[in-house]
Length: 366
Ligand SMILES: *Cc1c(COP(=O)(O)O)cnc(C)c1O
Image (cartoon, rainbow, N blue to C red; front, side):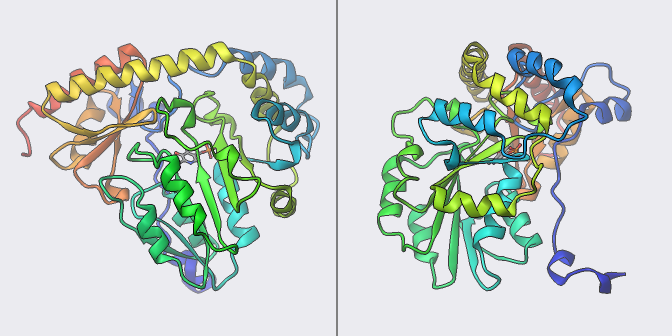
């Protein structure tokens, strides 16, 4: 049947998602399973979002607002931009697709890092677009080397900032240096899915760039707002760019419950504050625990930590699974001896360390 499939689809590897909790319970006959594999919010959804969903449920016989009018207005106000600077997506994943479809011609290429969010390469692949990958430097995007890879056919540079799965970030100085020398026909996409968790001063304020530069900023309600299951994200850009992206997206891409939930979540400052506190405290707790186990990790600006396990990450993932702890092995990212752990609740973090200690002292492997 292969003759039926487009050539560039034949070579794609499927995205491997974090292992679901229910599946793990079934497989190992476990009662309590914790998932620290997909950088989700361990506190649950924003309570305000939940309230809005309940109120909207009786309206789901209707199509959602195709323009996302109310949510865009609210989001724009909270960001200090105009509603027509926004494009809403069925998760920011969809917006990566919309961006590539809107801007990248068949013979043009995309530059990103070699260890980064896998969707850039996968979605480029489904669209038959070429991706040039540059190596990270000390686990961090190397914007200098990206600049060096730009050729006549380059259209987009994708930067995950902070970078998933390493947790590192590029500073405003680095971004501004890249932007300074960027040709007018190239777009820089800054994917800021984790920017709520930043606690440094030199992180770029991307809202400053998009008005005068060819910059698109991506963000999502999946991580800090706890709405991963509803699928809603957004892109920020000049209206000269968003107007074309609006033509490419599906007319009802963001469902009715997601629009209502996201709008309400924006008001949930208390939930965001609790989430940030949990992540920042949990991070230090896990750093200490990992150091205690003699493991190296990459300091993270996000809600997850990349850990050098010093042994096969897939094996470690499988061993931890038996004790009801789901982490993410990094094989698909080419980091065979690493795992990535999402910062959970206090209890989950403690359980993660306990199981990690148990498995590591099991004496198997090296
Ligand atoms: C999680 C994540 C996204 C987002 O996702 P959606 O759930 O599709 O909004 C985007 N970029 C990065 C780098 C991520 O880690």
